[in-house]
Amino acid sequence: MKKLVAILLFVFSSSSYSVWSAFAHVTPATESEYGIRVEFAEINQNLNREYRIKIPAIGHGYQKAWLVLTAQPLEKSGAELRAYIWWKEQPKARVLSALEMIPKVTKEGIFYETLLSEDEVQNGYIYVDYPHEMFDGGYYYSIELRSYVSGREASANKAFKPLAMLARTFGTPPALAHGFAIFAQRPLRTKRRLTGR
Image (cartoon, rainbow, N blue to C red):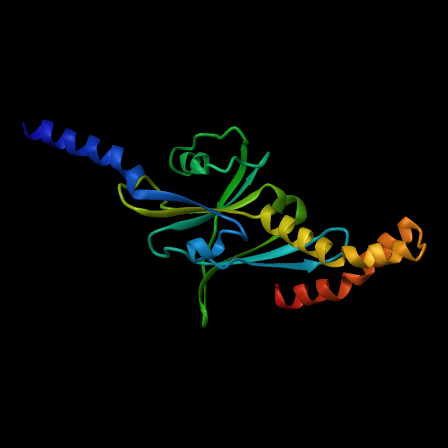
């Protein structure tokens, strides 16, 4: 009888952990919803762009963070990464590497920080979860790094598109107008490099 009760309790808790936990798909548009501030700064403006990414150590002491690189972008669901971290089940978009990140302790707090190339950012994720199966609640997070690059580019293009249009209005050749718009973005990119914003 005791064995039967123990089995029932195990099955009940196994089926309920998914109810108590929730997946958080983190992008610039959802940061405020989940209370996460991702610092994403372009530090190299040459042909080989690099980005410094810094996030608070969410759930430090209980949860861990992994830098995950995949062969293709993942679906929004994020359950694939949980299955990979917990049970090593490969998702459809094959995981190339999943490195546990080491938290850094500073006067401002505890953070995870990494430096990635532009190619790595395109299929890169910072995944935060318990290191093994837990019958507990709370969020588990997947930070989609490429959304920060595309968001910045869209913002920059929107801000400087009127300049290119103005140049075309005065009969400037298209190639020169495009170059003018890129040149006009340099002060903004310098500010982003220094401030991370």
